[in-house]
Image (cartoon, rainbow, N blue to C red; front, side, top):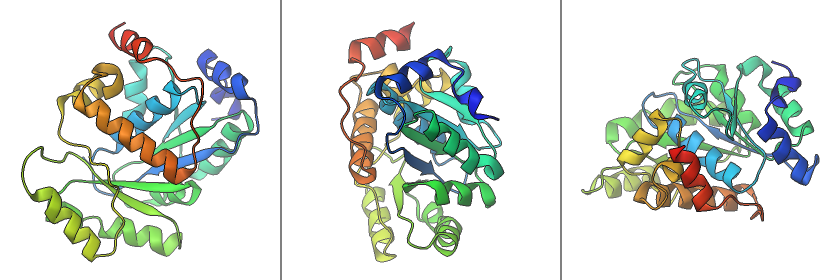
Length: 250
């Protein structure tokens, strides 16, 4: 896919034109070799929030299941733009996106131990690894953490606990396990909430599906935390909650 495809959407061109080319693009990779951990949920939630702040945002979907691409099909061209991508061409596509004025790129990866996840990790400013809270799921993180550490030494990798039960002590146990292993854990958790699943299935994020809900609040806190970690500054062209809500129900 060429750089011209990136610029095809009118909304993309408009977002880029507001600040012009040359902004230091930030890349967020969402990586985990285990399936069903919420990678696409996190990728799309962050991308929608970035776009809502007026940032020229692209999701690069290198998941063979094309989950983010399918999600975007239900958005009728509304930002963020989602671009199907392949690991061997990821660096080329990222360079094209930056040249055209992209400000935030979120890379959604597939559930397999292949070159795609490592390519995403190499390109990223920060790597987010979604994980469920059970010890079995946490132990399954080993191959992902080791492969990134071996291939991209020094890359910052942060576990994001997702699908967290609303009640119970499992979260504390998970955090204790990860901290004992000296693995960084994001302070924001994403719980098991219907707005994530319902929104994703309708081509929406929780912020659009239920703007004042608990899921939307968690997603906003995660985005704010990622901004602080990746050096993404506050932007003055944010979409209003009323506009986002109207878009979700349109």
